[in-house]
Image (tube, rainbow over all chains, first blue to last red; front, side, top):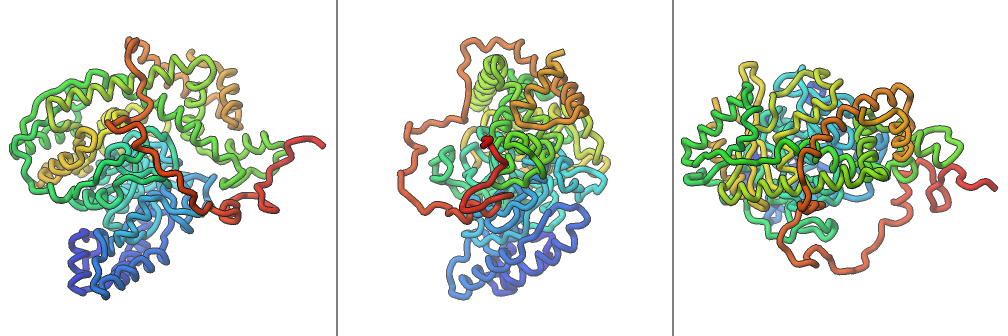
Length: 479
Length: 99
């Protein structure tokens, strides 16, 4: 069994043909992951007991002749912002270094009900705030493709684990690009589903109106299968959608003839780089497969970053108020009063990026500024969502880059927060609109660094998104 | 300048964040630069545009409500398990009111 390149189908086949048991697979996957992990630091900690007991349940079902589930025996890595009962969940923060959640996120429950094996928790930017995973309190993650480079962020550990082969699939979270951008940097597929498609119950809140859980995988089909398992209405998240969950893998027939794709003309000026030219080649591949490609307009693109960094930080400043040293965070030592204890705990506990965003969010919400910033940003968000609605009257999907550049070197951009924010331009527009978007590998630069192509579709249009990505993958992508 | 040192200290107070002088200086520069970029939104006349506070789809008004059925709560012990300081079934914090 070649653990680093397994797919969900191969695991299922092997289990049902009794070539191996899920428990053997879990043990081997854990051994391999623990051995390989020091190269990248993708995982923060492992959960062998949980993985092995889930595997034994899969083996018992198979022995009894029962259906073992869509993810039977599949080793999964989980970003450490998604709570796991009894397994430490740090959010990459000193404040939660020792936090052991008393409950499971809905996505975790669904993964395990489908037979998935949770191998461990992956490193990320503190509270998912960042684009490089360098903002983790527990050190950075290295990109398995080029160890001197970042894996992207904030779900850098999950992307790295899947790329490195230490997990077959992984869960991440995406608020402004935190699944798609690391997927593109590490050369794997990463999916941000429609807002509300996957329950956020148990996802540590960053910006509630923008937060998503989504999968990473080495193939489009595996990503589609994981989404099918975790998607669906959850009474515990009132923003989760009632819409039925289709079998996303059924549409993966390689046929994209006649689909209309839009290339946003507002993005073209930022596509003059090597990454941009790979995207053009990717678009050409899709054209050869029978798609019609035309330019479309998303006229409010230039205002997306500003709108996003107001809304996301405003929501974050409110969501992060709960880390106060009383209920679950560690507490700063000696404080004479309760107010001092709050201030010291938060001042010592949060890293620089979290503080910066809490400050910005508090500022834009403070008395006298609400209309000028938050309300204005929400209006602009509405215009950006309208841009997409209008585009989807003309085309079935939008294709775009994920990032203006491939993985950069560790430390290269840490000192310029605005430049880091500006690099989110291609991912943030889809996040604001709440539409499904994914990154699919689209060749490598001359230096061998992966580039991702983004495919965006209308609300609940995941089937079309997966169909295009899968056809592109089947055609061999670019190169 | 879009923001002053005094405002930075005031906002840190609102957010219950203890910042060192070096952090105040750093965030003054960072926030100023970011607010400068954000100022771009003023170019746009958003007069009649409706604010988008959540991602909406077509559904009945009550589509997202669940039946109000009581379920067992987390329980006192589990709720206190991660507290840095607790006792007698409560979270403990530094003294709030002088005797």
